[in-house]
Image (cartoon, rainbow, N blue to C red; front, side, top):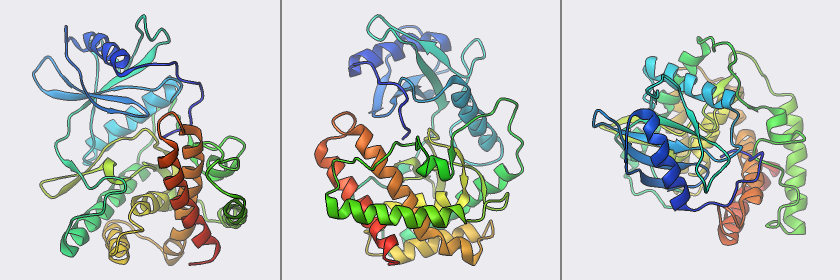
Length: 340
């Protein structure tokens, strides 16, 4: 999920599927038949490569990332894969390019298109669907997630990004600046006067807390920033991470807060949080101050969601979904305001 800098041109599934079919030629595939998997921020397809292996093709939404930012995302993913973090690997075109720009008569403005290696596995869960795991399974899954996130942070801390590397930042300006990463929320149509007033009070509290929060190499670096259930996969008991669209510079604890955000309504939430933190601590240190900041970073995720929902209504999501997601986010920031 990202803020969109330009208004996408009207399109249909058929339009982006045709564009994906044409793009496949850059990978040496003629008359390919892309299988649409997801059509949200990006159009995501399962495609066949010339060697018979499956891959994931992404047709990026217009204005989503600059070419330099997309190239940087793919560079980090390639590094993580080489460092033992289970993520997709970029698949270069026949010409050796990380991605290509492709257009069609229906979609005249060129779209960025890339391919990633296929990862087997199943998502940890789906948004809004209660878990069906046993307590023991939940404990194992979230401990493994914690270890994987910590490993990702550990190896990245020792990595020197290549020249030209650029990604947005989940810092103070990324949440509260003039142009937040996921858009402003103050004019949200989903918050009545009473709830908006409380959310604005929570924003003031969060701004003050974040302005004074430690930021150092110990706790700040390149993060995934969108470790929701659908982006964490399980395969043979191991954790795999996908969808790096929102990666950028931010506090490590934000990755943990995002991984916990969708699970706050689960009956076993305290165990989920404890397992994630315990797993993380097996690979990387967390201070008492880091743990104490989890409510703040959960609130930051909620502020970001409020902005994201407002910018997507009647486009990517319905008003009903927007109202439900905004209510959940408002509840999180109001709980933070009250110290709950």
